[in-house]
View 1 (cartoon, helix red, strand yellow):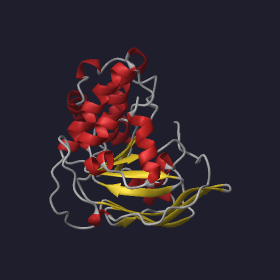
View 2: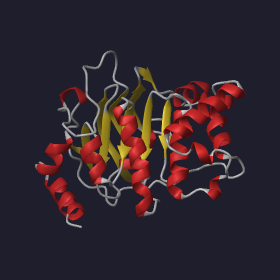
View 3: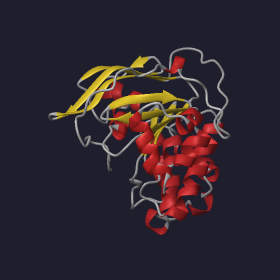
Length: 284
């Protein structure tokens, strides 16, 4: 699995002040889920999180709350810390200091408690990471059987429902190598959903795909957003960010520089870093 943002291009000066979710305005984006007042604890909570790779300060004082059902898009230049932020949420990357909680439960450092909490956090990576020797339906069935102890027949029925949901039920008995990249990524999404996660993390899910395959994956993600799945999405797909997100986080040099609703970010970015980023991205 790849992690394009494992280290920033430069340590840079930290930008202070990551806005809490409660203060972030709600998106008016066309495909974004409607946001009702969230009950209970935030689905994702990060407080004073710092992370280094050697001398490189890759996450700087990250404070973030994501309410239940919100779709948060993480944007920023390469090396800004986006993927590292995503991977710390289920402790694929350990942090140096600070606190992370999922649905009010502090993220354990290791052991069975961490494995149990990770089961509630689905993650889709740049690479598909499917088991080549197992069929598509077997890939989706595996984790519920091994981790959730679901009976095989029930796991298969659920896997077929999810493959239907992502539009590839007719590929169930094929092997990963027989599918296109877009189809494999949709299998990866179905596999994550098979665990009935509380939150889904997407780390550049379309970056390894040919352009004609991108939309089929984004369409699945838009449907998840409409259904109210809590999602944190690291992406360079500006169209998706604008229409499917409730909120945009813009990162630079390991800090959250802007935290706002998509239309405001794309039409009136406040920071020079965001203006420069959008100028380069949207001019092509």
